Length: 64
Image (cartoon, rainbow, N blue to C red):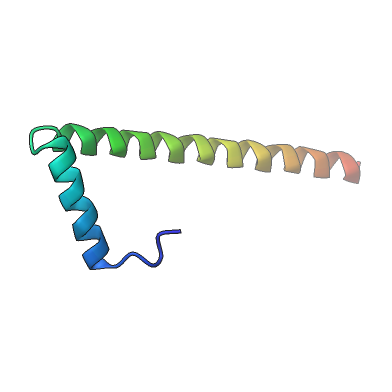
């Protein structure tokens, strides 16, 4: 989705963000985005692990 955004595109996005939120809110915004991404990664990792475990259980049952 974001494969076509180059360095100039990222700079423009950062400048627009700076204008909209102001310099005092940027650290809070960055922290919130980081926390959200971390939580998303952890939840998807957990879902993948659960699916893998369930798949392993069904394979064991079919072999027995």
